[in-house]
Image (cartoon, rainbow, N blue to C red; front, side):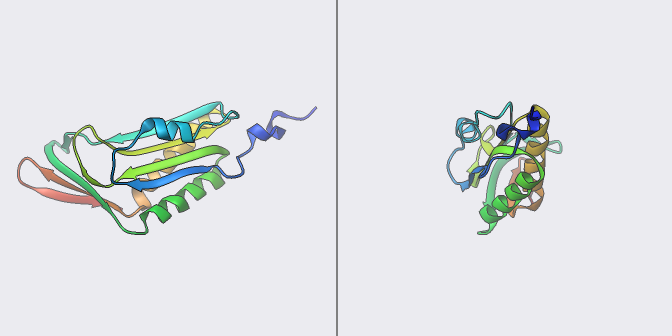
Amino acid sequence: MASTNDHPGEQAAQDPIKLIAIRDAPLSVDEVLRAVGDDAAGGTALFVGTVRNHDDGTDVDELGYSCHPSAEDEMRRIAGKVVAAYPVRALAAVHRVGDLEVGDLAVVVGVSCAHRGEAFEACRKLIDDLKHEVPIWKHQKFSDGTEEWVGA
């Protein structure tokens, strides 16, 4: 009898990168969740990054994201690294650019795997590497009149 790891559903999918995008329009958690849906996945992990009203104790009045033209290619490269390191069934990542308001979705990523632990680990790796390596910059304007740029 074959071990459960021999079942095709236990292995990574042939083309698990389902959605990679940078958008200047509102993001949808439902779109990412649909993109990572897979009948062989027992675990799906999502991360939703939202614009908060403060940073390091200072009120944020305005926030905008901009990116380098290579940003989407870099997102795809990082997705490929995650897919190579984990048994991913499906992966999706979208990031917003432009002016955002408090509560807006800035980034949504999702990963599905056969098991929850793998899905959590792969999703965390995906968002952490996106935040550290993709050339997307956040420009925050604070209520005290100061501002800062943050990004990879």
